[in-house]
Amino acid sequence: MSQYPDSVEQLIEFFRTFRGVGRRGAERYVLSLLDWQESKIREFGSLISGIPDKVGHCPECGSLAEKGRLCEICENPRRDVTSICVVESFAQLQSIENSHVFKGVYHVLGGKISPLDDEYGENLNLASLPERIERNQVKEVIIALGADVEGRATALYIADMLKDCSIRVTQLSQGIPAGANIAFADSATIGAALKNRMEL
Image (cartoon, rainbow, N blue to C red):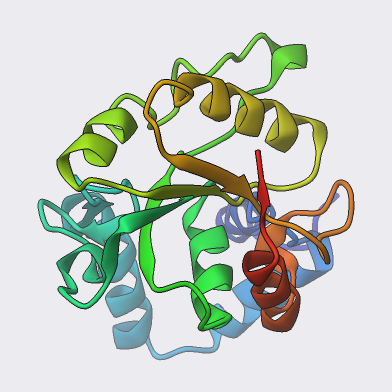
């Protein structure tokens, strides 16, 4: 039987749904939160409840952005729109940005193809990619997905989809271990993989 009141136990279970947070970590978060002043707890709750109204996806690339607006990268006129880096998630985008190597723009898929789960790309942000390529006269698409089975399947699917676009399609090269999620790779490793990318 839990020693916590039901409402606290529910909050602990909610925190456990966060990636990488176990029971003990969730307890620490909740107990810290309960030490806050009431005004701070209410402010925290207000920030969370406001997310659906304030945070959305960039209409150009699919990354996180203020709702109804372009993300900072797509708004930046200094970015090279003729080079698109395709990533699975915002976390991967951030990892690549931290390498300070890539100066182009991104296309965030929002997931990967998973043949074992009968997911073949229907829910991915792919429909707008060919239109972006044509509109911005894109020269290269870099597929920067993880080296696991799903990442490889997704990379091959995109390469096949773009085979008639007359552009260079590459993928990350050395330094990304098999099965690794690039969101957790260090910036030097990602920088090396970008610089030494290979044709796909």
